[in-house]
Length: 364
Ligand SMILES: [Zn+2]
Ligand SMILES: [Zn+2]
Image 1 (tube, rainbow, N blue to C red):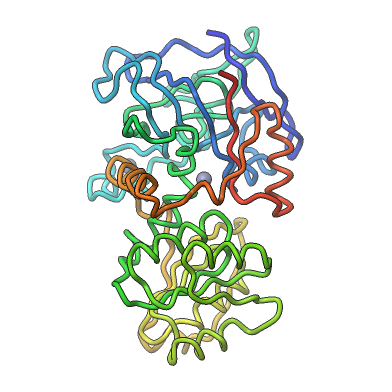
Image 2 (image 1 turned 45 degrees about the vertical axis):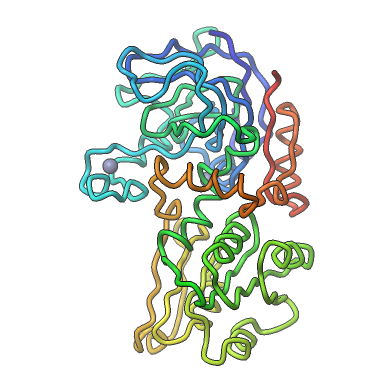
């Protein structure tokens, strides 16, 4: 079928709107008409360092199932769905209920092709890579799989929900699933983009106190306060580690690094009490090294990496949708909608910090 998609043809260049051919769904595939797709940091990172070209990115899609392959039983045409990350379901980590750490997912996520090496997309016979996170949702339609499609309640505002599939579950899941914070625990969140602000909202849901937001942009600090931060610190003006010790007495029970910056990781680690836990959520370029005094973890502190907030999408995304419907995860405060053909403006605005979570609305 013919679809419209945003195609990346050259490393770091703007996306081009093109008409492409999308295959009919194979037995294990699900065709989704995309209603809206969030732009996540990883889309921009891959745009600047693509593994394959030309390629269609996008991995925070939400839409309506249009057609299913004859092996698909999980969803049917007409179902509203949120798309998430792909995993194999068969490796040891998947079988242990930790699909975010699937040992087989890298190729399925970034390789641009199906397992048999074919592409789902083409243009007049030219091969176009897709399958990004098993979706490539910067398009009017996407082919997806049972394991990355999550049916959601029909009364939820579908166009708002795509980011639950990556950025929002990453931040909220880090707090709820990975750190499993207790009510009354103190937490400091470093880096208040969509992921960090989702962590702040989740910390409020969990009853943390204090909830300390750290960033260098005043309007993000203000938004963090609005979303549940009890204290905010401008790291450009003050030393966050010292201030967090003052606020908490001894350091925070938990800290989250959501900036992907080695200096911030060190600050976050040094802000937790002994023995507290510092979660690393922010993605840094490959090869980035961080340093700390070995003694700073000697006394029981933990540093742990977290992917996708340890979310099991089938379980966690419906839970997040319920939080949205209850007004406890007010996503709309983070979101700016753009028409699909303004994707390059949306990427630029988020890069400049003018928007926090851009969502592309597909033409009806
Ligand atoms: Zn796996
Ligand atoms: Zn993402």
